[in-house]
Amino acid sequence: MKSKFNFKYDIAVSGSSNMKICAKGTKEKALELGKELAKNKCIVISGATDGIPFVVSCANREAGGFNLGFSPAISKSEHVKSYRLPIDPYDVIVYTGEDYAGRDVIMTKASEAVIIISGETGTMHEFLTAFETGKVIGVLEGTGGIADKAKEFLRGIKKKPKAEIFFNNDPKKLLKEIIGELIKKEKKIKK
Image 1: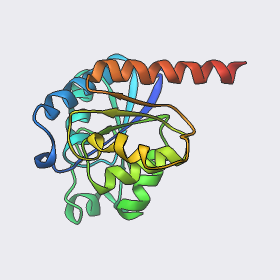
Image 2 (image 1 turned 120 degrees about the vertical axis):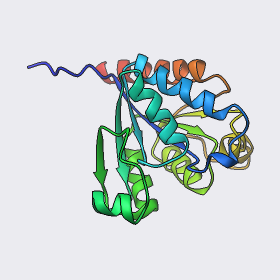
Image 3 (image 1 turned 45 degrees about the vertical axis):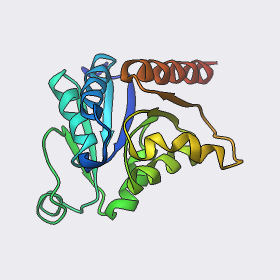
Image 4 (image 1 turned 30 degrees about the vertical axis):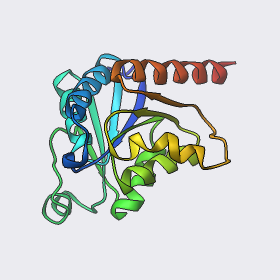
């Protein structure tokens, strides 16, 4: 039986939970990305947190998309009371009980691609997990934080990525590049 859901890709959004560190215009880019993810039938995966992941997930939900959150908490109660994280707009939240570092790994590995927007240490951890596990990575430039330092960081390491990394300051163009790469990977699997 065919599923009633018609989602094509699982894409994690990693970014700052603190909007104060983001460059001017980042919130607008995050809103646009959320809408584009829904339009392209992508499930948005995130850390079920505030800030950038929350903004993208709200826009995705408003545009008819589906949001899957991975919580650092062991339960809904701990998620809300101890971690002080939101429940809405997440359709499903997986309570990992792995705190932030463990949650980051689970969330990143559950995706097909990861989009980095601004961010600090948690975003860097997710970026490196995606890099090491061969995920397609998109970096939304001009958003501040880790996203604007990623190229410099990559120049300083010798290891080549296992998958493509795309840089763009336009959310729509960045998503198009990521989906194009995911389509290429699908074709290789089918061969």
